Every structure is written in structure tokens, then in C-alpha cells.
Image 1 (cartoon, rainbow, N blue to C red):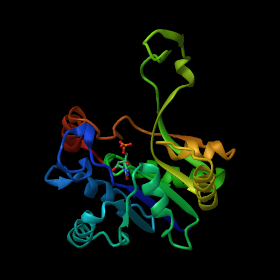
Image 2 (cartoon, protein in one colour):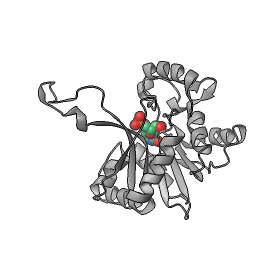
Image 3 (cartoon, helix red, strand yellow):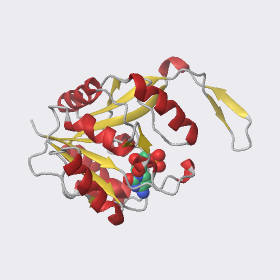
Image 4 (cartoon, rainbow, N blue to C red):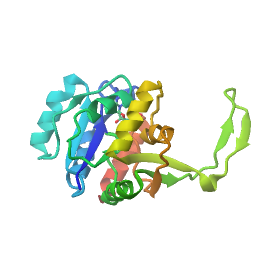
Length: 229
Ligand code: C5P
């Protein structure tokens, strides 16, 4: 089976307060994006890796490919204004043989091989899958002025991560539907839900953090010391 992974890496990292996208910040002397790419390069279930990034970063991606022997990495595609636009651009160049398409944030370098494999296998049989962890905190729903409206049942709540994997047609149809109906989401599975597909949860790990703010970077430095893929 042929599986492709799209890695959106066109964010500017405003919340990190850095001058370069957070995916290019160093972790253990290696860019965060390279750690992420190495996870997918070493996964036997993945045949191609497509990065969406700013055009100005294309030479860096080509350099990573050579320097870190990332043979599965295809030529990068230009990112868009929103994450969703970056993924839509990458979808256009996915190999014609790909049956499963996974999407994984560039800034989640601590994904385990088991999570990638289970995500792909689950999508193969059920159509769509998301990696997620059980909510640790009690969650409240509140009004915009901060008044609690209700307490949600924690037993049924999950924090959603990536990878998210889909049978090719489902992801393509979900993106077409979103484009035609002006639906915007920060989560690909939400778009699949809009065309009636209910993804299956693959239970992941709390290590698979999204490096977004400076405190995430501190945690990432600690995790990097003990992470086993
Ligand atoms: O902004 P957020 O934390 O949701 O970003 C998640 C991922 O999406 C990051 O890897 C970021 O580089 C990517 N992204 C993108 N194109 C954008 C915005 C974010 O590829 N326009």
C-alpha cells in the first residue's frame, strides 16, 4: 500500500515570538522540522513526504533532503495563508498511487512510529483516523465573557493531535467540499466530518506535543533527551 504524508510547515510562528518559523528552530542542534521528517523517513509504511512551506524556504528543504538523507522527501510546495491552504496546495502533488494520505504538523517531532503506523492502518480499514489523547483536565464550556455555561463530561473528551490519516478520496472530497462551502478549520478531520465521515481515534501519547509557544520549546528540550521513536 502507498501512503503519503503532507507536512504543513508554512507557519510564521507568531506565538513563539521568533523571527523564523518555529519549525526551523533548533532542538538538539537539529531543526524541529528535520526531527519530524526523520520520523516519517524511518517509517516503512510511508512512501512519500510532501512539505508545504514558504517559497523562500525551498532551498533549505532541498538542503535538508541531502544533509539528512531524506530520500522520501519530494520537492516542496508553496504554503498558503492558512494551514488549510497549505495542505490544499500539497494535495495537488500527491503521487497518483497514494491510497492513504496522512497529515502531520511540522512542529510535532515527538510522534512515535506506532502512532503513524496505527493511524495509517486504521484509515485503511475505516476511512479516517486521528491520533488523540484523553483529556486530563476537566473541561468547561464558557461564554465569551468568561461565564461558565456547563461542565463537559471528561470521559468522552479527547485532545486531538496529528497524524490524521484518510483514504485519498475522503480527504480530497473533504477539501473540495470545504473550498466550495467556505468552511475553515485548523483540523483536517473536522473537514472530513463535514462530508459525513466520522474518524476513528488512535490513542496516542502525551509526548506528541505541538511546539507553539516558548514554554513548549523548554518542554521539547527535556523530551528530546529521552525520546525513543
Ligand atoms: O498555527 P498552527 O500551530 O496551527 O500550525 C500547525 C502547523 O501548520 C505548523 O506546522 C505550521 O507551520 C503549519 N502552517 C502552515 N501554513 C499556515 C499556517 C500554519 O503550513 N498558513
